[in-house]
Amino acid sequence: MRKAESEAFGAIVANTFEELESEYIKEYKKAIGKGVWCVGPVALCNKDYADKVERGNKLVSADENEYYLKWLDSKEPGSVIYVCLGSQSCPATLQLIELALALEASNRPFIWVLRNASEESQKWILEEKFEERIKDRGLLIRSWAPQVLILSHPSIGAFLTHCGGNSMVEGMTAGVPMLTWPVFSDTFRNEKLIVNVIKMGVRVGVEKPVFLGEDEDEHRVQVKKDEIKRAIEKLMSGGEEGKEMRKRAKELGEMAERAVEEGGSSYLNVTLFIQDVMAEQARLAGMQLMKKF
Image 1 (cartoon, rainbow, N blue to C red):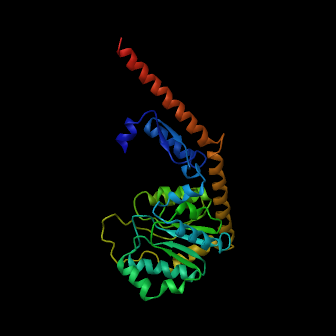
Image 2: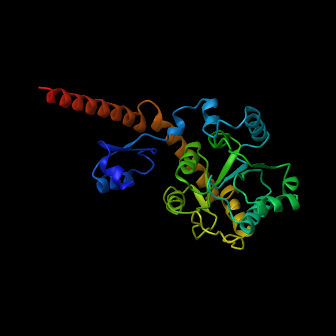
């Protein structure tokens, strides 16, 4: 990555917007000695329904997407917890059970994406009839989910996320407050941005990273049911702290919208970036022409 940064033309293009992390962008520019074009959130560049669907996965059927939307339509605004811990990880079985029991005990509607659940986890769900127990207010998705489409629905009130870069930006863009469950690498830094800097999220309580390819130890439980439930209540209850985080998330979503609109910071950066690329192409073409003489 460092090599790519050093060899890149002129500047770095980033999927963020200046108003979100202006101080960090300034420091990044100093560190790399180049400009940084903030052109995001790119998720807002096309608000077309079909585009939102395809950002999940083109293999998800239209019937499935319609089913998800109808399910969401049946819920109260801001009432649903959307749970997705990334495409490359899933909690160990005993930890997954704690999360499942916490979601059930919260008495709130939820959508849970379980693409990578182990055979043992799926066995527990089946044997304990978990899906049957929560069928009136819980929806388990075992395939790829149209995340942008789901997050943009007004019934979504919280996003329980692994804090991956794309998921973090998509949650912010949708104006949805977050429950943070970092997994590895930069997700712990992203959690600090969400909770401590932007102040639009609540830590669930995960302390240790899980590295790809590592034996996850099926008996390891980092966060118990009651801790998870407490984080959910802190964010979604009528308390002042939760209200403030929801307000902050909404404001951030509106700020992101303005950034990509005509005249916004990201809109202007895209324009300037295109102008710079065209100028560089003209310069290189001129150099090639001079070599011929």
